[in-house]
Length: 223
Image (cartoon, rainbow, N blue to C red):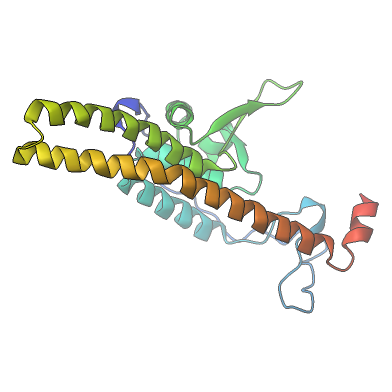
């Protein structure tokens, strides 16, 4: 998936990942694992125990993969940082601190990401700060944008068939491109619809599982 270059005007910043260590365990210790052996989620929104350096490496690796797909470097790093934050949203200052980047680089990168639909900006009542977050269904939204581009490509290619002549070798190659994009454009909405149905079903199953877990009802009453 290559993002069009005429949409990209992102600034570039220092790409060096921040150094860090293993954060201290939240007060009260690590929650005990249930009988299944999987640690229970920390109560009260406590931060999970993670290796910060490993997280930083993953952010940079994921950003590099996005760069290979055509995303500019700084927007790729910011998107990876947002996707890997537990809150799901960060301020420009948060992003600059996490990525050791300049405010100007962050500003240009988030503008790019907002333009291509990979990030949204939101505010809070009574606060002047803005937060940036990746949409809940970011990938199918990005794919949907590609569908609009493919419709444009298809329209231009059809003109090429008429200009070159459908019965010529060049015209035949362009016509094959038209058929390909028409096929993909017709299938994409069905694929996205199937994904959303599967996601909704899986989310409902997860909610049911959480609701029937021992002690969940008591925790809900405590809130």
